[in-house]
Amino acid sequence: QAQLVESGGGSVQAGGSLRLSCAATTYTASAFCMGWFRQAPGKAREGVAYLYTLAGTTRYADSVKGRFTISRDDTKRTLTLQMDSLKPEDTAMYYCAARWSGVSGAWYSDVSYPYWGQGTQVTVSS
Image (cartoon, rainbow, N blue to C red; front, side, top):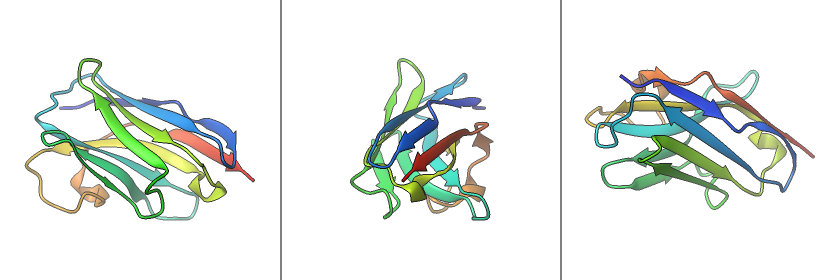
């Protein structure tokens, strides 16, 4: 089981930065792979970043490569998403998600993640 709570969203101007955090009330680093997803109004939910916790492997959507960084702090049971050089098109509700390490499926496939946070809003103005 994993219970996830996001924080750190807000409003920022284009070019600015935000840091999202995801606190896991129940968390075992070796058991879960973690991801950040986002959903803008009228659009499908999309994978933004992914961390394979056992190996430390990361994956990013092409639209955020070089601007976003996913990381974790196992002692604090926290996953973070550092977002730099934000653009208006990054505006969305951002969600933290977790799935068991052995689950198959593309990292950006939201249906493969059974555990989700409630989301945190990110708004980037031009």
